[in-house]
Image (tube, rainbow, N blue to C red; front, side, top):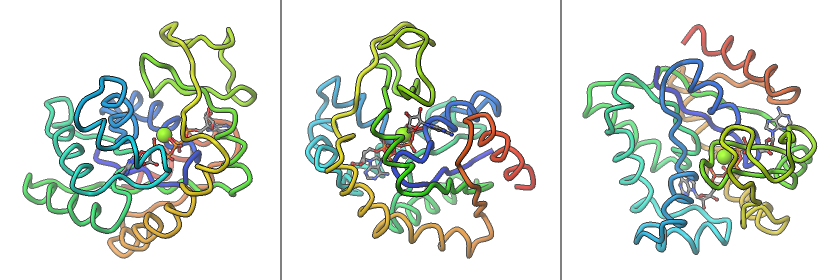
Amino acid sequence: MRIVLVGPPGAGKGTQAHVLAKTLSIPHISTGDLFRANISQSTQLGLEAKAYMDAGKLVPDEITIGMAKDRMSQPDAAKGFLLDGFPRNLGQAKALDEILADAGIALDGVLDLEVPEDEVVRRIAGRRLCRNDGSHVFHVDYNPPAQPGVCDECGGELYQRTDDTEEKVRVRLEEYHSKTEPIIGYYADQGLLVTIPALGKVSEVTERAIEALRGK
Ligand code: AP5
Ligand code: MG
């Protein structure tokens, strides 16, 4: 399957993508995780993206689209993928359409996670990520690791993202409303969109997601 996950910052895209990717045996491709990996390895791409991410702004399309395209062309993505955080504006959505059309493939569905803004802020404030693998995501209250500061999955050190401050979250939400939300209508018009409430336990949201994607 080829799926896009969309939703505001902190909605649970990464958390759900991690579980769904295992269940569906397809890679989880997060542009946010790819940027953070590039930053921690001090690559040229990471250096270019860092200032935008630190400000809570979208990284320019010229950088983002090429990186996403490269990742989607890796052998493990040949039979499908779950895109988390890409596309994030109409330009990226149209670029993705072209990439897929050139490869003779198409999206199966776009899963939209709906979460009220006050919950998003609570989720982001308590989030902790693994330094070894950014797809290992915890929350100090809602999904605490067995040992504080240590990843349950690989023993890596847990840390807080530098863009997870109240001020940056406000900017990220503005970016989401002005630039990302328009893609929801774009995909609805193509009959690809399924929207689910993303409140409740992680496992309940996963069940809803699988049910919603079943017909796709
Ligand atoms: P990115 O890394 O994609 O961040 P985001 O979209 O802001 O989303 P988050 O990762 O913050 O949230 P999430 O929905 O993944 O939630 P999570 O599962 O972690 O992007 C970061 C930056 O990179 C952007 O600002 C931009 O600069 C750049 N960027 C990335 N992609 C780009 C693109 N395509 N174009 C341009 N720029 C781009 O969950 C959050 C917390 O909630 C966790 O603690 C989790 O444990 C908890 N939680 C999850 N589910 C539940 C639940 N059901 N109940 C209770 N708690 C829950
Ligand atoms: Mg994420």
